[in-house]
Length: 337
Image (cartoon, rainbow, N blue to C red; front, side, top):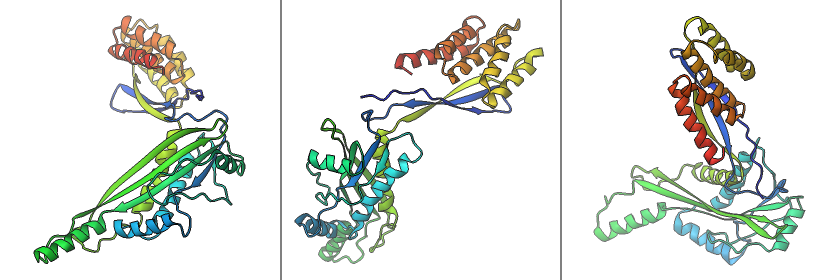
């Protein structure tokens, strides 16, 4: 089901002291990439990326760590950073509460191999333990670097060619992969499946025993968690609208008075002044006032009224900003915002 998109516009006035123009920035909401069911108020989150103790997968992962240049245990700690990234991204947002079942552990492959989905009985048990309506699972997490591989190639090359000065690699690449599933047990559906890929490169300056910065892997994992959960959260896009802060002649003071009200977000009182100026015998001031009323109405969420004033600004008074603004508003209507 699709959550209703409430049009909440935040406006910020941007001033330019040496210009007749001011501008206002508007933030328009965008629907999230993944729409979660309306009844989901709490999401349980588990880390399934680790292999069970003493399992064959665990042994395989240790051998893989030696081969690929991982630090022993680093993926375990980094996968927890993924979960922290989720918590950080939802903090202060209008989003479902995220909770972690305190006494239940779920194990997976311990590698970047994606496990089969959890049974619905397991999903329901995990949700019931926290009062959640959905389950977010970090199904797999894996990182590696080409540090050891590059070093081995160079060492072997030195032995074969007998060139002790064979250059060492100048950079090391790190790759982090996390795979997520969002389960909805009410109708036994997987709402979302998504793989995050993070890459980073570090200069070694030819140092043979190069060690990754200690925060490189945790930071990449943390960002991975934030990247995933952002798929479930509404986003915003910012637009800027130009408006007039100055008029000409005897009415110049009235423009300044109205604009000061707009600076303090007192748009309704500013509009009262601009409505009088829109009927001014001075065509320049009337056109500018119409344009400002168009911006005011968009700020207040009245798109149709904004379009009327923008058209009047250009059609009746020849204000070119009004023409451009009319086209912008028509495009907004076309795409549904």
